[in-house]
Amino acid sequence: MRISRILLAFVLALAAPLTACGGSDGGAVAANGVPKTLRVGLIPNVAPDRQKAQYGPFGDYLEHALGVQVELFVAADYAGVVTALASGRIDLAYLGGLTYVQAERQVGLTPLVTEIDRETGTPRYLSAIVVQAASPYRNLRSDIVGPGRTFAFGDVSSTSGSLYPRIMLDAAGVRCSTRRMDECPPLKRVTFTGGHDATAAAVLGGRADAGGIELRILHRLEREGKVPAGALRVIETRQVMGYPWVARTALGDRAVQALARAFTTMRDPRTLELMRARRYTRVAARDYDEVRRQAGRLGLGGAVR
Image 1: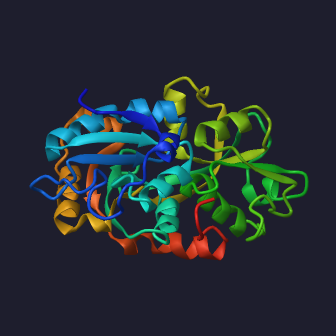
Image 2: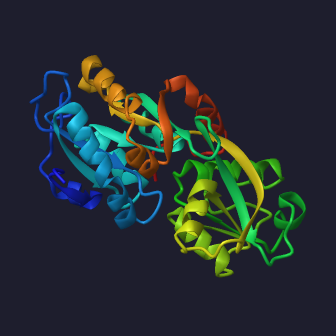
């Protein structure tokens, strides 16, 4: 593998400050306008070490497609990638829709592409609310929304693990505070686990009656044996616009177009499978208007916590 370094995002905090204009390597760019050292950030939608291993072949693909060196950074949390984007320490990032909406308040970003999901065949995927399969819970409104019940979200800035479960709870009668994220009456308690795998574990372990999770991640955890197949049951779902790959707008239009082409011309089946994609399609800022509106209404539209 030619990837120079694959580091956790906390290492970024130790690095010397880098200029926020041009490439993150200080300005050296290839003929296509892309920084000669392209630094790519990934949100940890599963444990960071697993995320890091998953995206190694993708880094190799970008190096070949763009003729540049690639460095991957897997954040310790969602805020880590946003901080790195805002400071100019990374150039390209894979963000959930909510994280993108929050990040664009801090730095100019251009959404490039999202994947055509392998499960839905569209640019959208599913956020789900799950319970233990052995539980008596069947209906969100009548069985979960009530005094004494507990709920697990993922990272507070997760689109499918925080925002969309909150949308579903809100529609069922829960009134979460826009000031305190952990107050959602009439629920007794809500917690933030930090990730989808941790949410699945919390529900399986009885630490929460129900939890919000990205459905395709649950399916992957089942395939990998991390969650026993059939141990969790879905009681509610909602479609979510796919994760955008975004570039810092300061890179310039040539670089933005070259980066987008690298995704839309990706054909290697192994790389696409690793990326959970059938193929990639272009997206624009307007594709995330629902996320902006709902995040603002529910108190999640501000800076990443």
